[in-house]
Length: 294
Image (cartoon, rainbow, N blue to C red; front, side, top):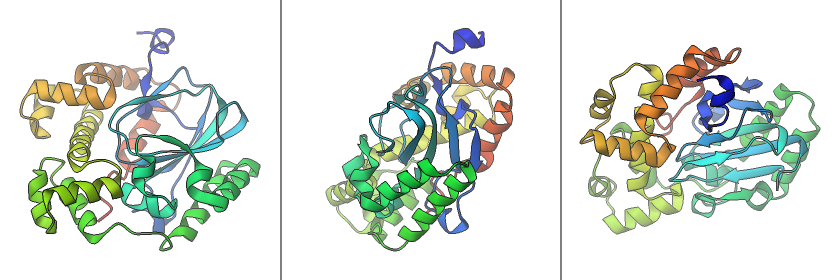
């Protein structure tokens, strides 16, 4: 598969090579799920964004025909395509679902699965942040501006309830493989009340969140061990059978496990300059997915 042919097909977002990355302030490590990343808009084609429990914030920079220069994408249960052609470059921030509605002055459910203008959820401070980022000439300076904004928001907004924090911890510790009724019993709520409150504060029902956590665990295992036998990955991650694994993986990534593995192995064997190092960095240090919070 040549790069020219490969570019015709959308590639998973973790295959991108950022122009720059920034480590969030230590006080933000439980709130920001990945390192800050700066990307150029001249990528080969659309990028697949997997289903996720995180909240993505994007700042479009330079010459742009995007509908907004700052937007938020809430937790979502389906994959989507992000086109890079509308802007020359962009800055990407991924927020933890337990913290996003506090940091952005909005309940997660209001942004779940939707693309909305940052101004609508962050008010005048959000508009000032967008303007400052656009005016700042360096990526390090832009990362610092994001740090400063988020640090100023810490402790000011609404926090997730202790029951939801505990429910989230139970899901994460079980790798997504835990009955929702057991979680309800663990937090002392009815099954119905847990679903309502979890969806309100996280942005997805607990069962969907559990499936995404399990899918992502499987995807990360493939990334760490590209030559893994798929049926073993499925068993390790708690799937009852291969067909269930295949179905969930395609539902949340748009690719079957075998398709993803083939693209992964090709990418690692034929990287763009610095791609392979970045990819390894992304999975070893750049993604603080789930476990750090709670």
